Length: 458
Image (tube, rainbow, N blue to C red; front, side):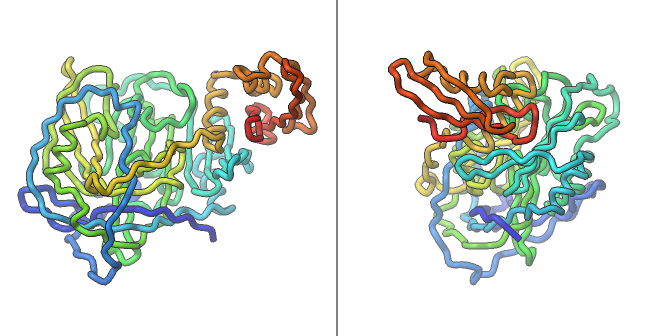
């Protein structure tokens, strides 16, 4: 059994003052098709003092989402005081990817065969992809993450009157078939609904995949408990995100499963941010902390935060904007749910996450790598199948694309294939220098696979 651990931080649900928000404890609604309409909250439990030694955290700071950073927001958030609280470091256990898990994913999406395992340059986690007429299913061979991109369909606008279809129910049914162990509390801060553009915050494809339409985005915030159920955490982000048509057809899915969390360390209360301080930081730079928005960020908006709707949870932070969170860190966050209107009067809802660790304990993330990875190959492959840069499916055109802008771009070359998935290029630069380059298919055996330069750029 192969498991992968990532360091996570989340606020233990210890009391704030009665005038400030109090984080929820363990939810009671398990991820099933039928959700309880009003679960009873479990009592707040103070952790055992002997769980782990107190430590001072040094965690990556949250980074703004480039897609949302340009949003013009005026926000009203009351700065109530609060009491200090403690945060806990968790070890996160990933799914075990074996034949049974692969079969479970394939069955959930009704795809057949073994799919195609992609290249994994620089030791990155490879993707297994089923290229099916019903949609493209991608599963990470190391983390168990699942992506789905369906046909570019649109049922049109939903019928007026009472709601006739709840896409959230469809999503929970699918997650159940995928074997999730997460729990979803049916409360205001357990799921978020938006339009087509809401799904765009999670960039899966290099280039647009779905045309603008009238689909609905649903993001769930999964809750994971420790084995003894004495504490746990909710992830506020896009780990469980889906895009549905008005008729209930699945157009896109992002599923990042976690098997469980376990306590590793408890952090000193002097390092955590009080509610009022977090609210002040939010008002100073709302766009920096904006994570989900129900409308496109194309016009100014005025939003209000109800302190009763604020929670403590955690979110992913790190330098890489990858398709998985394998190398990222879970950091404690204050979560704010806001509502309001745009300048033209359209209703708006939004989710903000603010670092819950004081600024002096936040560290800058390491530099983002621009090296070729399994993620970048998958993104490019999906974009090509969507009609962008189709020439990359041809080895010769892919080679010319690699040479553009380089010193040998105007040189001569010969190309020969050693097998169906490998091509050897001999390139002669204008100055007479000769190079030998190897190109490979990103997804060996797949006829429409893109080609890429498989070695370090020379």
